[in-house]
Image (cartoon, rainbow over all chains, first blue to last red; front, side, top):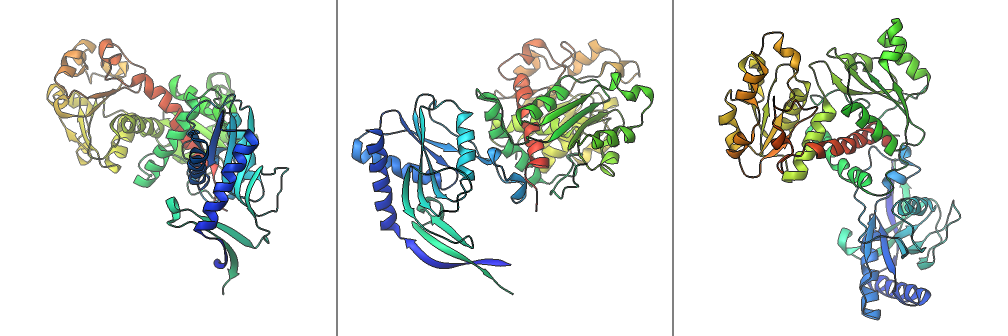
Length: 185
Length: 311
């Protein structure tokens, strides 16, 4: 059985805070403010990250942008390859997406398939003016023509490695690790 | 031919076979499914490429349409076998009908039949998932699940509630499935109805109270069963008028119940027999909501049986 072993800690809590602060600035710069902006986190760890971006944007611009939660389980293309019966959670979007600029937020981008499913899920909810993508970690190995607009850190990885993003709200700490699969026995 | 899957659960035959966790899993899934029904684009791609067949050997509008709509909302393709216009009329056996559907690549078969245990029999050889949409006097699992989902939405929980089921307990598959499900989730069940229509064995699962006036006083939910009018011919009840006098849910009876009583009815209603119109359309009634919840629960059932598979 393959087990995961910590190979390196690539971001600690301060690194993460600075990366998110920079991402917030970049989002505001590209959109010339927070007008018609909505942050939509992809479940699960995209949601706390979207909330932190919201806080940063409030402290910079003094406006509170809405934050939504997107569950993409029903839109995945690999449902039959996952474990038994993944749980479906509710999608919560605070206001109509029509006419807004949606920034999709996720912790890691890898093959791009999650983002593809996220775009499908989003377009079933309405017609945003534009969609941008913000990720904390880009680990490469894309299988689809999808590229983030805002990236916290590029981390070249091998496909044997796994990126684990930890956030206080779920994991009790803020950190990003590279894990390595170890075959035991 | 569809591959013989190795899902955790391949068929939905009855509530009796489900665990508490299975039931809660379906109820939890039904909430995001209901969101899909309520939004503008009422469709998700989850079951794209799957085929679902409905095979109803008994008349039904609600259950059949609900299963069919649920399949469409999840992007499955649908084969609706009209039993009265199909080869069944030429004497094709049930087994051959299933083989025919399998040869067409059907992944799941939703079946209603007047004989107890038909879905169980089909599951013994079918490669497709078998979903019981009511078999004789045995079970009607999707109805019980949608009743529970409706109760949970209104009351916030099921455990500890007192639920009254009124009517023909003896012949009702809806009652049976509900009684199993409520017991598994820790609700207290009371049944009421004419003594001729309440089997003694139900004591194992429920309290019996032959007086509806007494029973209604302290329950949180009342589920009113449809009285099958043909029961009158068999002598089990004297007349519909008499049934209404003793067991009809009237606004007078509801006055003596708890203020937050929730009224359910699986439909179709016999107004003025088991339930009065003013009760059925009152604030306490969730009868129309049961219909939309039925679609959500059936989407959850499809997802459970066909959505995610073990590798």
